[in-house]
Amino acid sequence: MIYLKTPEEIEIMREATTLVSRTLGEVARWIAPGVTTLKLDSIAREFIRDNGGRPACLGYEGFPGTLCIEVNETVVHGFPSNYALREGDIIGIDTVVEKDGFMGDSCYTFPVGEVDPKVLQLCKTTKESLYVGIEACRPGHRIGDIANAIQTYCEHRGYSVVREMCGHGIGRSMHESPEVPNYGRRGIGPVIRNGMCICIEPMINMGSRNIVIERDGWTCRTKDRRPSAHYEHTLAVIGDHVEIMTTFDYIQEVLTDRFI
Ligand code: MF3
Ligand code: CO
Image 1: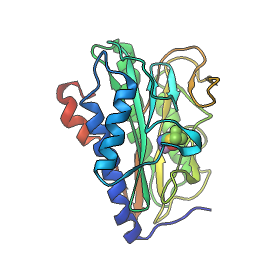
Image 2: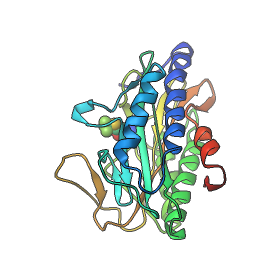
Image 3: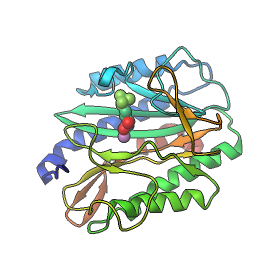
Image 4: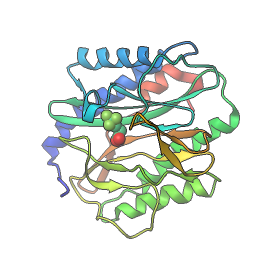
């Protein structure tokens, strides 16, 4: 069941999508070699609470953190830990904020210091594919059109698309229908329509698309341990217009010349 939102509900959801965007901007200030991912997690948790939100990942089906931490080969759902970031790492930070009853979900993959240009290119292409997916998200078109656009963009550039994890609908819950895959055929899947709110989140690998789940039951990494990148926005369809409700502007303000 796809819950279509009224313009009033989407207006309320703006609180959550803005706060999650600001949270990633706050975390961006702290990303540097030597910083532990637990430190980033506590920065985010306090920032969200100080701004009237609830860290929605924390405790979700037992997830132990505010942030999902995705270092190098980690694809999604890594735990914050005492791992200290190293020069040359990439770190995806994925988080969900609830405010005023609605959710906002966003992810950004950050470079830590100087990063191998090949790995930076993976990040750049993954981020571009997010916007290619957003471009394909139009009222009257179908979810498969988004999926196919992302897959085509990434595979033509020599990368592979993780199949097991998808984007999703969002609203009062962090995961609602429909599923929004990053691969598949055009013209299939639900029709995109007024009031739909979805998250598009390509998870793209440098090597093979295969993943494994670690014994903690959550951490998803590439099977070949080559790097993976991940970017995510929350979108709303308002009439015949598609609005990107989250923004990377707060991150860009912090990273300035390092923003890719
Ligand atoms: N954006 C992530 C997702 O859609 C958030 C997961 S929160 C967690 O899967 F608690 F499940 F990790
Ligand atoms: Co998501």
